[in-house]
Amino acid sequence: MLVVHNEKILDFIKYRYSLEDIQRLSAFLSENDVLSFPRLENGLFPAALVSNETEYTGYANVWLRDNVYLAYSHYIIGQTAIAVKNIQTLMNYFQKFQRRFINIIQGRVNPEKIMERPHIRFEGRTLTEIDQVWQHAQNDALGYFLWFYCRLAREKYIQLSPHCLETIALFPLYFQAISYWQDEDSGHWEETRKIEASSIGVVVAGLRELKRLLIETEINLTAENRRITPAFLADLIEIGEQALYRILPAECLLPVAQARSYDAALLFLIYPLQVVETNIADQILNNVIVHLQGDYGIRRYLGDSF
Image 1 (cartoon, helix red, strand yellow):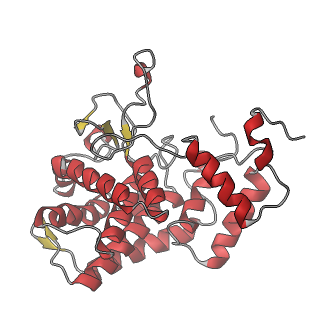
Image 2: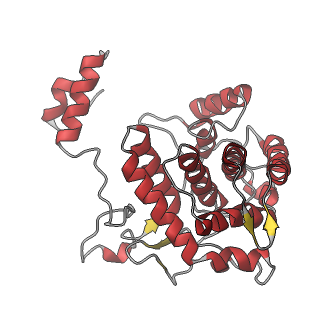
């Protein structure tokens, strides 16, 4: 039985919707700021608006993955300036903390020390790191940034300065250094570390987009005295794809204790990343519908901690 908690939306509820119905509903939601996302002056999106009473939650901070998705959503509806400002500010953040990448690339620090990895959650206003221990082993978050930044650059929305190119060049070298195709990370849900298809797939998508950028623009991409070539990226992509298809359509096979056959994070490999083949995409969709769909949405995975 359908339960409506706000009478204002009664007129918008229909069994079938015409284009005009959808336009009316969209206008109504827009007028009531339902689909507006408050952002900082620098274009970043905090996790939530907090008051003095709720500041303890930490939701005033910025999550990398969430910001890329919100930026992408604005890009899709034509609000490209909002997306570009967000992504450029994220680039400023990575430029500020290049040492996180370089230290691991050069072997100065052990990537198993999670706080030594690039931080995927930080203070958005000042672009400063947070001392709180956090699960920063999230290769998917870094992959999303690489994917969308390169896409915007390919479409000429972003001008590539030498400093930006140097920073972008660090990403594939970092993914190589941590052996992303077999690296245990905390992934989309920031939980127990394991080798996850969803994380591998996002990195593959990012590397593919970087390879397209290189080929289309013929830019010189160099970092740490190493030139990033399409051939180098092709090899890095191939080893990731091989690992990915050994796991799919599951999310994780090993270790056995962390094995997971069904996970909603795999949906992102279908859209927006378009990184999986059609038959695998169909299997992932079917698994989500059969095993994760509930009365009001879908679980992230069976036994979802939330």
